[in-house]
Image 1 (cartoon, rainbow, N blue to C red):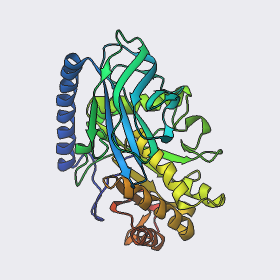
Image 2 (image 1 turned 180 degrees about the horizontal axis):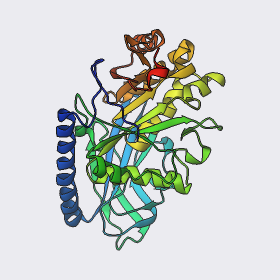
Image 3 (image 1 turned 30 degrees about the vertical axis):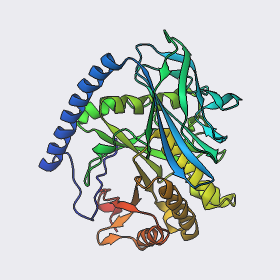
Length: 367
């Protein structure tokens, strides 16, 4: 597990040996235990299937919205289908597919990788729709394993809700975990072992087919039904269930970033923004990290494409925190790193902070 500490300034690097870090880790552990007890209490009391609805962005002639499905029953639900009434015409949908539409009634179902919802599982479904009024209503769930077909209450909100939003303070400790490893890292186990509630998961890269994927493997894309890909999603859910949360890092020292892949194919910032947005919504992220190093940090045109796309994502998700991880010398950021920050700011990206790569590789690697 790599350990980089994130700061808003170029201060000294913390470790778990620092008293402040030990105190922070203890607070995370205490919060996790309290959250676990609360989660089990709620599970016993609620025993229902809940659906949350949130408008992400409304541009007048249409909108983007999220549905959040939570299995608070006592049973695993397989081959779930959700019907509801909605006056708008749904143009596109992700993390689910439309089975039918009759008048204003829609029926949607899960994909191969998310058709089964374990007890306590949370699944997001996003969509865009045309002009109209009102929110979805009259939700009804059917699934193998459900003892009844409950009517599901709508929980309208003005902004999408994501788990763990209150955990990310002004200063935090979120060590890196390589999710390209096999077997898949035990995130809950790592959190308990090291006393941390927040983890940075790396690295999302461009796959050969041009999609975002863990370690750039086509079998580990966001919508993959591969056993390892499913296990990664389950690990993230398990960590959140006990009160933790994750940040996802895109890029890294090896592989190709999605921005580089899109630039090679002549794709523009809106297309790249759509791919980033799908990742944020699918994984329900509060924070994202862009690890820009090696050749990537010295490619200003590709950096401009990347930052323009990030700015577009933040326009519809203003609460999304963006971090830049950049190489550093003893005297500060490299000139390429400074340029990367400048491009981000001039593109309109709201940068939460810069994570400097203050790692000690020994005297032989010193500049």
